[in-house]
Image (cartoon, rainbow, N blue to C red; front, side, top):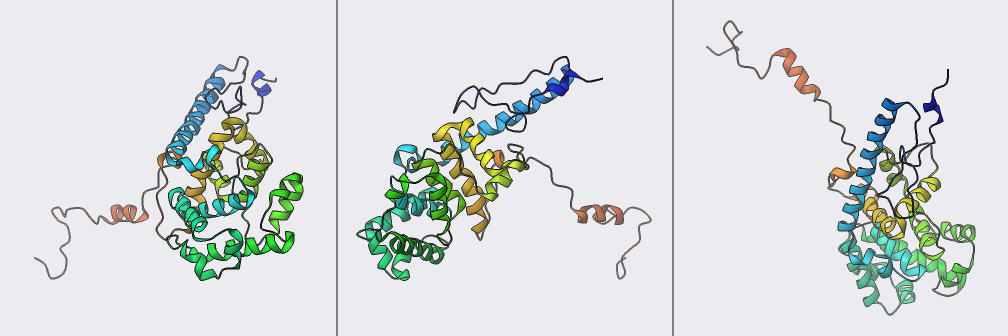
Length: 293
């Protein structure tokens, strides 16, 4: 005998069905479960919990992101965006913006950066914890562009299709996948929220995405849920607490909205002490340690 509950439509985000409009992440719609009332309320409560988690992440991302990470203030050329985004893979937004401005003010243009020695490029990145790797990437990136196009500009790349742009950027040594997706999002209106592998794992851990879904599918769903501005903010917020956090010598704690909420198991040491009786006051008849009366 088939239950009507079997006719549940697959939700878009682990229990959340597609919202009524782009960027309207506050109005999740729930599917009808027929006469299966207990199952309906179980899934309803689960969906509400997940939607609240996503709302909390969006609110935290909005507070976290400075004005430089708004749509209107984001870099307007592909070269600027690649370098700007790369800085955000190594540091928090405020420091990234400061380093970006230092590079722009210390050199006449990106071509001067290209012909400069690594040590000079590092000066503008001195406050980052990985200035050498950053300087090497920036110089190699600019050298690649100049070698391929005989100029320091990628504006003509915007005329190409998504596949050709992706292929060109993938050929650049050290280019991060989320940077490529950000270029496509910003300059080709590709409706995605860029996700790195670490960001993807975190969203699955938080039950906001499914592991069996492709990354491309996840990116499109989050963009549909959040809209361009929120997607940009959430991307940078998650980027800091995944990719940037992994590079830090001193790890920062995850904020509550990015914590799975699972309780840690009691330490094995504590269990062992209970079994042996250590840590308890010795009662009458308890053995006295050698050398003590």
